[in-house]
Figure 1 (cartoon, one colour):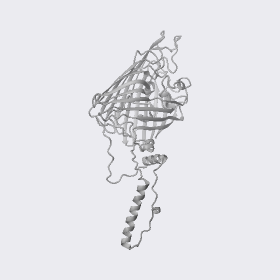
Figure 2 (cartoon, rainbow, N blue to C red; figure 1 turned 180 degrees about the vertical axis):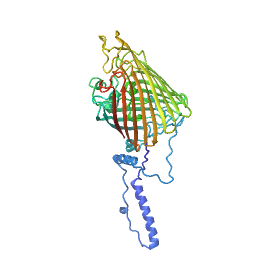
Figure 3 (cartoon, rainbow, N blue to C red; figure 1 turned 90 degrees about the vertical axis):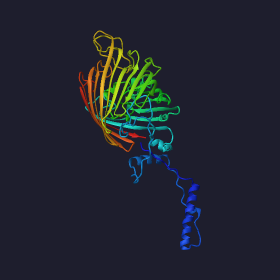
Figure 4 (tube, helix red, strand yellow; figure 1 turned 60 degrees about the vertical axis):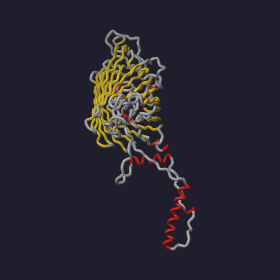
Length: 492
């Protein structure tokens, strides 16, 4: 992000004194040269001091300087950046979503908070640790489907223009570079748009989706506090509240993703968890996480909530060319409930060079005792609102429904403002419990991300996907779907 330093003008009295002294000196020299007999200037002749620009002018200046930066003076050096504690960052951000191999449930321990945002710069010169920022993200798509693009998301409404996310952050990051004292942070998020459905948890404003299936909705999906203890190993962060489900390459927040649309894998796995998770940095290369939540996508006060465990291990090679992140997520008895998914996830990042890397994720998930909706037997058990039943063997009322998936990203950075993404994946919804169709899927997407300054992203893409066993696209009408889509993210 661009850093903007604002110099405050001198108080009026000092400015007038400076003008007066300059005038006297100039006239005195003129008198000496030209033998002028007297000095006639008065304070009224001095130009008034300029008042500082207002909020909207400072905001406009930020965007102007971001989109039309002045050339750096010859010999000028960049301002020194805050030093990271630990291994060097493997990637460039921007243009990529992150400069480090990602893990969830914690700030990047040892990394400084060097971000500056337009809104905070206009408010107070970006001088406070608490920050208010966000983005607005409209999207557009053209599709071969006419009823729905599902299981493609976030552009599930075909042949339309829509507001995906209007999102506001209020946050304070703990200082994790230092190792001398306890620190804390917090995070508050509010969202409005079509993407609210991918934050929805049962009991959190969920009727707008589960009961009314509204196209647009609002949510408060990420609300937590961070407690940082620097002297536990090389730093421990404890997050308490509602947060994004820990594992995975993709996340609900638009700028955190390589591509506008999301993988099918992402669409059918957990979205948010409520509870507490501890992240402990054992060394520069090893990190572990352990947490307890109330299950996936449910509020603690709902009947579906139950104690669930999460355990993750993260390893980075000393060269930072490889990273492996493995998680067992939301583990409990596994009995059928609202998104009570038993998730086992592993992510591998590999860097071929500074400008080329891959990100690969695979998972296996299941639920026990899922109601049979195969139609071969009269079943008095009705699936919960907002969930699917399973296509079970003949003669049983319930069965175990499982699914597995693997997705791979290939990323090529061309410049600090441009990168290319190619995503391919395979998903097998073995009992149809996640997508509503008992079929295998494949999906391939080509995308380009272009930055304008550090405040606008444009992400056009072409996507083709296919369902092999049953027609699962356009509401079960076709086996295949092609879409051309793009979003625009405007940061504030």
